[in-house]
Figure 1 (cartoon, rainbow, N blue to C red):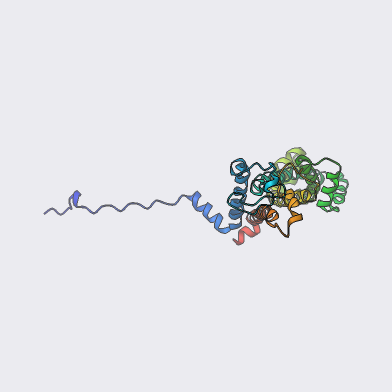
Figure 2: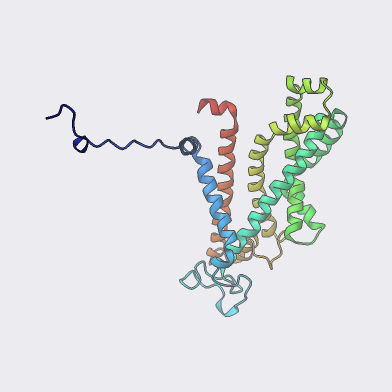
Length: 300
């Protein structure tokens, strides 16, 4: 017998264990450290999906009147019941997500862009700082909801006017945040070196200042988005926001408040959807704040 083992009698080689991709491991670790980002992101994604698929998820025309079927209890035919005009509350709630999300995201973008521009100018151009910030302080002295109501009283009810009114009420807070960041960043050595080397002010702002304000702005934008949804619902609830012909969570609750004690489902379902959406945005904002804060990141 040969000293060497025949090839066909050799023990089979064990399969090599495939390594887990680093990207997948990093993503799983990030989710493990920041579960609020995952939960908030999933809930927001679900609400966005509902808004996009509202024409397919809705079982009835949200504006169709049916007086003979008014105030029906939730059933297999009307999942969330009907309101005092016979309209399907479920379909109106699905379509209402479009208005609330559109207002929230639009206000977050508009307020962030306008507030960032004003904050950059006020923080870097010291001649304009006192004048601009005193104007922002004047706007911030008025509660956002009261300022939005006053602005809506001067215009007609529409989704576009609601976005403009809430954006005007929210952008002063962004400008003050950015201005404080700019005052801190402009004292950094690399910014002073850029100024000493003769770099133009727009280039300094774009390369050295703006890039370092993006993380706080993202967190602030999430909170503005949640606040804008609540403000829009409040405006619609008191009749100063979205027109009644356009279903939104606010005016659905407003139309059902007269029957709250006997038909609570008219108010309950849109209120639940609004609460979940606002909670999801706040969870995302809290998670981003923890993830983007270098001091908290070191602890984790």
